[in-house]
Image (tube, rainbow, N blue to C red):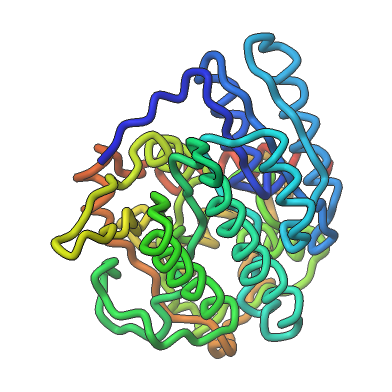
Length: 360
């Protein structure tokens, strides 16, 4: 592994107004002296844009208070190759963190064009820009880190999921695009010696998250008095990972790139790696929603006498869903000395308090 000192480096983060991206930008501004952060996001209306705008304002406030940090935001869609190329040409990033993507398993079934445009074409544009960053003897991108997903494990029955497992049976288009990203990154690492690391995220949650995620959509429905549907009759288990843990993992990974080396054939051995980032402790969905409603009551989002049982409905599995996600994080712990550890109740408490402040 090659250590990268972030001092004086330019870091390009795509999806910078997104859930993980915005938190990563703020963490770097808070903790890393003398860096330049270039954030790009298309500010899509896939979900309530006000949340993205709120995140962006939080970033701007931090950046203004940290004069040693140079921060630039650019509204850009990574499926626009010319725009991506212009950004690389102007800023010559040392590290690229590709978090921009069209999220949503069920959304990918209903809107495949948007998913392919962002997750396949967009990521291809990032790979091409990284490739050409080495043109004419330039130093080029030292490390490409990109978001993959636990969804690529598909219908695998073996748990916990290991990065050594086969991932050839995706059960949604979203999962298939994330698997494709890993394959494309491997090819570019092999062909052009680009150090790249893929991160398989496991059910990320926390304040200012995505409204399409279960904990957020449950909250919205409970507020309205609607019933929430709990899939697989409540027998789903998810490896919920608090966003701060994800960000800490990403921050460590970007500073440790796969080492470049040459094989016996004289050709580059791909400087390529993939890791799981999850809690290594899956929670039953029924237990999860019980803790959620307790914390919503505690924060004053729901009244103390709220009849939770009257507002939940157990339903079958939905197309594209998987019954369990469970991360084997031993490789991440071994190579980067990191293992997520935020307790579920603590994370949901912070979400409930943010929700109260933002909406009520």
